[in-house]
Image (cartoon, rainbow, N blue to C red; front, side, top):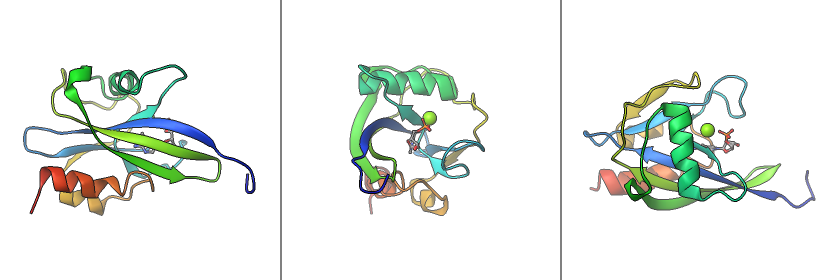
Length: 140
Ligand code: 9L3
Ligand code: MG
């Protein structure tokens, strides 16, 4: 694709926070792009779909939880230009949802203290988001 324009891929992601201030991350399963890297749960926004609606749908599909638009607080954006597309990914913070997050797509899940997120290899779009979560959840 070098020398060609990249399409924009809109993806939404969520930092689910538990009562102890830990953040949920998911390991991308074998067979997917970026397999083995740890990411904030989420996925692609479908054409015509509102970002919050896409995130609510992805959280239900991947983790089996139900949340509401009012429980999604936008925190920041990630952006990364891959060879094939330019990824734009708003990150939402969610502290209130129904159900217990469980792996619905074979992905490993981990609840991690914000500063310990640095110990997990993440996709290039996700890694810069850690600093924003540390500022929010574990300020000095
Ligand atoms: N992606 C990166 N970080 C994330 C998510 C949810 C997704 N936290 C990237 C990986 C893929 C693309 O977005 O390149 C689409 O994600 P998926 O539909 O393959 O999960
Ligand atoms: Mg996904």
